[in-house]
Image (cartoon, rainbow, N blue to C red; front, top):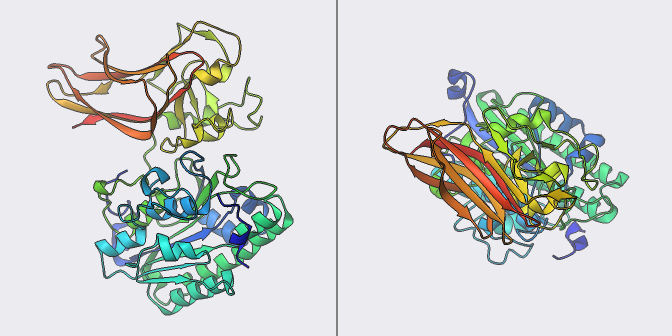
Length: 492
């Protein structure tokens, strides 16, 4: 029986393949992609389970724990989850909000195999799934072969079909979906021995699929990127769809020519799977596609990410687990924070704070913090709502100040940053820019909700100016919050 009976209904980077070591070797080998989806799998439980094949992939390449959204962006269900992985965009773009796919925008944001076929029709593409909506609905008819495994065959049939195609055919890009871990999660819970047993079984099937790749007679002339991921997590008691961190958990395990063995990264997000597959196949990612994913082969850390090693555990926030290291008030090199107009309040949120999704969203769930999907790794937060939960003086008035970026006088420059802003009057967010440390001038103001997105501001640089500095000033009281990440100033 399909585990779906247990369900409760509920960037753009203009680049081709990522950098490779050894241009001659890369030119001589044919790039190929294998994506394996483990529905409802938790990385923490994979580590607890007897999973030698997944352990071997982890040792051979990259492991990237990650998290997804919750309502109102979308519930933590398979429809939104697999759509995000396969299209490379978040639910606010592909518009899948449940398992019915009503209003899906797959024509505007197609699956990565369809994009590959469109760019290079000679490529051989193949998708097989134990949950039929993936191959019936998410992947388009442009994919060379889509197989919706009959329910009676379930993951055994999905595995045997994938193995046969890898063994007997010559596919360039393959997607495989295995379902039974999610079935065990719904039936017994993620804390159960049955869930660990399901991971063990899926691990053996992953082993068969990877062995089929390595047994190919042309394997030595092929350059395989293998990625394993999941659409959502599970609660200990079973189920998903809500906003707990455990339900919002996902991950990427990936092996490929540019991914360091045994490496761990925190900047990888769910839409990166599609972008990474396309980049590996040598398909240039068109900015007009408006992808949210970026290739894992091309990391782009920002200044805030350098703080991960100095993050500390909770101080006043008792709802956050004591072992989670997730905040600091120490800015990265070249940055500063001006809190001179405020005092007291909850320690963690006293002025601009550098934090992570795992830490910040557990301060208080279901207030839209979970929808901060476009910030990566460590980001900056001004959270007047949480700061106000302890005795304080003054109002929330904090300014985050950037380093001085080089600019060319008399020309234009482009300020970009990722933001997520939730408004309640009299709260206000201001972006100010100064040139050569002169008087700051407001270039953008926030007084209404702005969902997670990347902002672009064109700056007119005064004649003779050589540097520009950005200030993000947040003022308010017991109001909401403002997120800033990925700040850069470059040429127009």
